[in-house]
Image 1 (cartoon, helix red, strand yellow):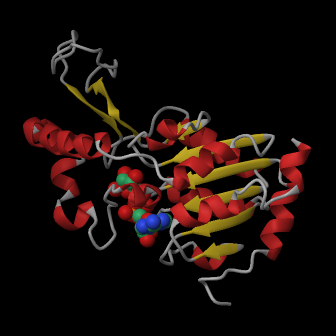
Image 2 (tube, helix red, strand yellow):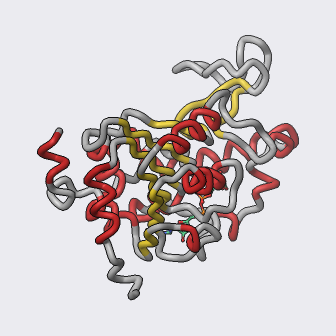
Length: 248
Ligand code: APR
């Protein structure tokens, strides 16, 4: 099968009858908006060392450096827009009885595109929280919380726990979904990377959208080797999946 023209026949049968859909996204879904990924050829981890910038130890050791790096990334986020892949996912919420978007991304572009039912596994770079008491920083507050702790970006650093309940809810969702997409993720960072495997174990039809193969690719029911900004609008096109948009 030529990867550039995947065989969608089985997928079209599944998507017409699917009632519970879940999507896992990674940095690749924001690539066409101009956001750098982490492990691609121009990935952030090719240029920067995660241990120096994205761990609690790094922040405690050199908070100014960590703030400088996140302010740089925030600047990129503020300068980009959601792409057609984000928009297709936002519109897809109305195509299924249940639709949940589970993202590893911290850029907030899914919500900016209109997605409402979003589980942010790794936090959100547009928010700050106290490193000690976890209270969110309010507009106008300085870099220090009233409890004396320092504010830090509300993103999950390596070695930190995911937001309470987020991954548990994500596993519950993919365990009961009948159609699951994994898009724009290298499937290397756990526990998020386990989600598509769990979906498969529970009988979901799993679609992978990625220009490159990943460790999960051999298990995908449909592997679309291409950019999510091109393929998610095709795969989630209401007219393309025909009757279901009439069935409401
Ligand atoms: N469309 C779809 N996928 C793409 C595109 C695109 N246009 N461009 C690149 N990709 C794919 C790459 O092939 C790669 O497999 O996106 C994936 C990005 O992988 P990573 O950079 O590893 O990003 P991600 O999987 O989200 O990383 C997971 O690691 O550093 C931590 O917390 C960070 O959430 C992040 C986690």
